[in-house]
Image (cartoon, rainbow, N blue to C red; front, side):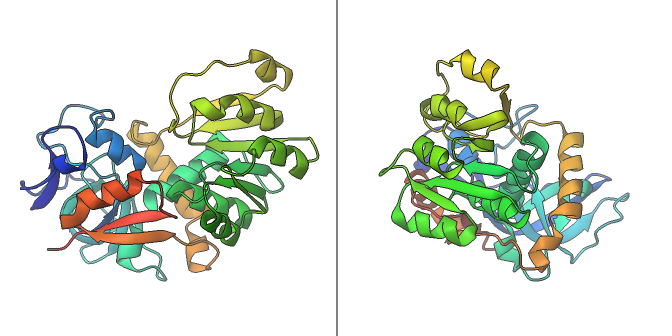
Amino acid sequence: MKAIVLEEFGGPEVLATRDVPEPLPGAEDVRIRVVATALNRADLLEREGHYPPPGEKPAHQIPGLEVSGVVDQVGERVTAFQPGDRVMALLSEGGYAEYAVSPERMAMPIPECIAVEEAAAIPEAFLTAFDALYQQGGAGPGSRVLVHAGASGVGSAAIQLAHRRGMSVMATVGSQLKVEAVRAFGADVAVNYHHEQFLERVGQWTQGQGVDVLLDFIGQSYLGDNLKALALDGTMVLIGTLSGVESAIDLRWVLGKRLRIQGTTLRSRPIEKKMALVQRFLKEAWPLFNDGAIAPVIDRAYALADIAEAHRYMASNQNIGKIIIRMET
């Protein structure tokens, strides 16, 4: 099968198409003929050699944390799916390929209203957002939520999930076009960080009370203001570190407001916990797709042959929502 294999690390030019053996499903796995995959910031880090796949070094290092497609083989103990089913799946690796294998309990049926290609934009973004909001952040109806990078794949999913669950949402973005986008997703307040400081707007918006849950992808440069923006007993969920990984912290804010700082990743999480997350998501959030309450947000799609250009576009930080890669055969 065709796959993008990392044989060296570096810029987008190292993304090489190779012929590699097709993966075989285990007894509790489904094999998916991939229609599309989607890019994640983690893919850029892995390409640069900073985010290796968990576990033993694979024979072929194939990036890609999510896919959508059609089941073409099932293991002998699989009961939930059969060949021909439309599915999407969260992966630890291997999405940039014509075939991918997923444990049965990590695969999800594609909602009827969603095209197979579009479904590639769901697994990583919506599972990360769902986990960050509810399991890590403890958000619920009535919570005040601040989402940084609100126009990103995870950001757009988080805003939709929070809005549809009766939360008030503020989002930070980097352009007027993105301001308009996040308002359409359901944000009550949108802050263009090039023109104003989010901390001041948080104070105005919450009448000095602060936000209950804060989802941060930025890290270093935002940490101090993030702590000040949180309400008493508030939680900051750290999802990314785009501005850097080291920062001084004034512990008085943490002590005085009884704050919680929670880091989260999905890729390295034990498989049992990822399965539990997927099953909870299917029960609580998946029906919202068919109700039209939430939807994947797709900026643009590229052919597999243009994967390097897709990586360059993601690095430019222009996208609103997800970037899709079509797996053409």
